[in-house]
Image (cartoon, rainbow, N blue to C red; front, side, top):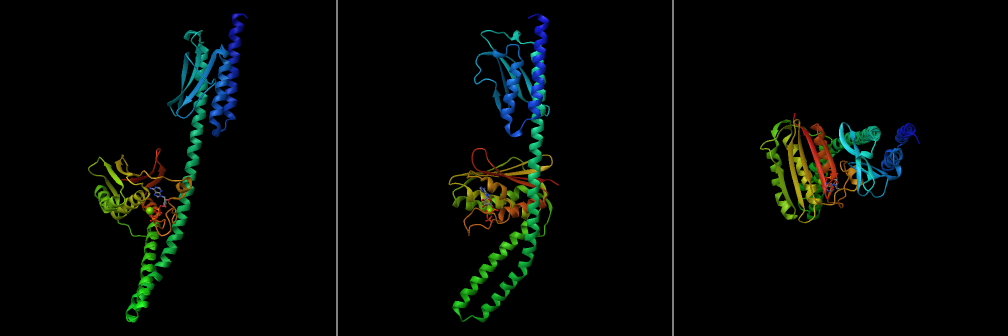
Amino acid sequence: MGKTEQILNERIKELTCLYEVSSIIVNADAELLQDTLKAIANSLKKAFQYPDKTSITITNDKISTSSEESIQDTVTIYTNINIFNESRGKIIAHLSTSEFKKEDFLEEEQLLLDNVALKVGNMLERIEIQKNETSLKRQMERADRLSILGEITAGIAHELNTPLTNILGFSELLKSDVKENKKALTDLDKIIQNTIFSREVVKKLMFFACEMPQEMKRVNIIPNIKNAINLLDATFRKEQVKYIVKIEDEELWLRADPIQLTQIIFNLLMNAIYFSPKDGLVIIEAIQTKNNVILKISDEGDGFTPEALEKVFQPFFTTKPTGDGSGLGLSVVHGIVASHKGTITAQNKPNKGAIFTVVLPKS
Ligand SMILES: Nc1ncnc2c1ncn2[C@@H]1O[C@H](COP(=O)(O)OP(=O)(O)OP(=O)(O)O)[C@@H](O)[C@H]1O
Ligand SMILES: [Mg+2]
């Protein structure tokens, strides 16, 4: 083969490869990224001068794939894969060292790698944007559902509040009428207790729907956090759960309703304690950024099942046994956070346990 013919041949191989890579990318399924990258690696390999002696590896922060199963002692050239202007991966071409030196790579081969990396980077960017859009859409749907639920529950709570207060009032009155009748008195007390319990549920519902009057002011939230923790100190000890507070700032100022703030922390800590194993550690953390205060409360319990993760903020969702919980704690918290124009998220920690992150705007 003449020299010119050989060069021409290499060019054709490179162009074929670029064309192949483009069509692989066009037909790529975001769910099968590994397969797509593998196909690209195989296509690249064929475009090199010594295809049989060349292996291609494509890696990024999540995936690594190669044209060959194992790659031993080699000389390499590589190029970076940039995603959103950040180097987030590499395409590497290997030649085995026993036969080759670095000079055996052609300049065109480096260019080809650069070219393909550009295409791969674009594809990965597109996939990432798509993923973000889907998760945003899901979040919005969930927020919608919660706010509709909020309106319904607010209505019901309102309707129930008056009759419950009446039941309570008339039962008290009746008590003085049946003073002599011991049995009737104990029955009445049961009615009264149950009514008080129901009114508490209604109160929580109204909190969830933000029907409670709010008193917003500038507060340093550190005393509030400490206060909520102190209220629960005895519970922590009784349940044999440990806790640490990680707050570096002396003061953290925020526009908020101080009572509701305490309620957020109180509810999250109550859950953390309840779901903690014996000797488990609860971490309470507060930091600030330019515009927000971020609260994190985590535990070492079992964390959430996928179903729980979807539903934790819905009123009446509970995995506690009947009688232990009403499933309203987190819906109240969600309502309060929303009324402060903040956000709250529930996640599983990578190793074990649940973590709640509350972001509250400073003003
Ligand atoms: N720290 C946590 N670890 C694991 N699961 C949790 C945690 N916090 C909440 N959950 C899940 O979310 C559910 C709802 O919590 P929420 O506080 O709203 O209600 P509850 O604690 O069950 O009842 P209530 O707060 O009314 O006493 C819980 O039953 C549980 O399944
Ligand atoms: Mg709770």
